[in-house]
Structures are given as C-alpha cells and as structure tokens.
Amino acid sequence: MASPTYESAIYKINSSQNVATRRCMRQCMTEYNCKLLPKELSFKDLTKILIKMQKVCFKDKNLHNENTKRIIELLNSKSERTFMVAISLGFLPNSKGIMDFVDGGAATVQKSNLELLQYQQPWINEVCRAKMKDVSGKSPVTNIMDLIERFVTDYLMKTSKKTNGLYLYVEKQPEHGDPQFLLNYYKKYGFSLMNHQDDEYFYMNKPITNKYH
Image 1: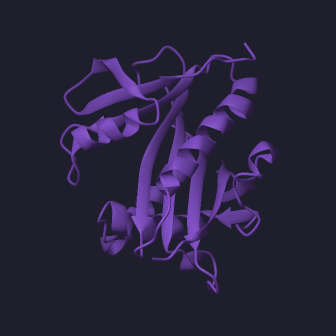
Image 2 (image 1 turned 90 degrees about the vertical axis):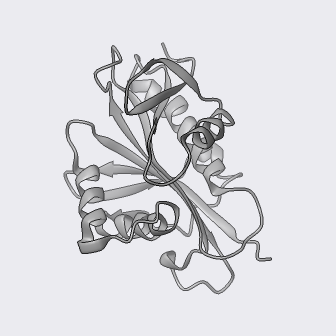
C-alpha cells in the first residue's frame, strides 16, 4: 500500500486580487511540509483542487460547472467572508504537479455570526477527505484541523480579540453521509454540540482561550 508524502498549508484569501497566498507557519514547518505547494494560487487553480476532491468526498459531478461557480462565489463572498482555506495533499514519488495528488484533505473557514452569536467567529466548512488511491497513514483532515486551530490561536486571535474558538455545523438531512457519524467524527477533534439548534443544522464549537485578550 502506498504511503504518500503530504504537503500542508493555510492559504489566506485575497478576494480583491482573486488569489490565495500560502502561509507556512514557522512553528509548524518541522511537522508539516509545505515548500512544494505554490506560494500563490489563483482562485481558478484553488477551485480546481477543491473540485477534484469534492468529486470524491461529496460525490459532486460538477455538472454545468455549478460547483465551480459556487466555490468561486464562496471565495468572493463579502457577507460571510472566506478568509482562509486549509489544504493537505498527498503525493507519491515522481508526481507530475499539484493536481497529481493521490490523497487530500481540505476545508474553508469563514467569519460569521450566523445571526446566532454575539460576534463574528471562524466557521469551518467544506471539510473534505478524498482518497484517489488506496493509501496508508493518518487522514490529512487531521493536518488541516490542526493547522486551522493553530492559525486561529496564534494569528487571528492577535487581531480579533472577540474570537473565542472554532465553530462548524452539520446538516441534519444531508444528501450524502450520516449526520451522526459526522457529529462523532468532529467530537474526536474536540468539538461539542451547542445548545442552539434548528430544523436544518446541528451546531458545534470548540472553545479556545484567547491568550492575547
């Protein structure tokens, strides 16, 4: 069974220039390779990566480029701004470029209060793990969840004093997948159910102490 080498990084979103800039956090470089990932990705190229993954994890065939348009709109959104995307891509020796990954994890992170929180907080969305081949090793989702938490703790909280943790939500009736499986899955990463629920979603959060407050 193949054992890929993973390249992992946070990409900060610049919607005014339609680019995503790689952020290799210095304290993570001993744990995560990131030098082979491009320093910048256009929204077009970043979307291609996410589309390839979501064809596997969400079974989205991208008919009529609908998912492509949706992700581009997500990256350009002003009301619930996507401010970063975390990716972790696994490559075998002699790979032919960034799109030649055999395993991958990704997630987007938006700032929003979703009309249920007092202040805007980071919400993790589009969590995806896509295995293109049978590979061994831990899930790259572990990498991206760790990188997101570190970025929020060490960088976002410096400038956003009201940030108090990480948030996500799970559809109660998803087209694919089992919500109970996802709830248990996210509990492994330290998330717990919030008291607020509605007819569509379960809401979860992971409190983080703001050391800069």
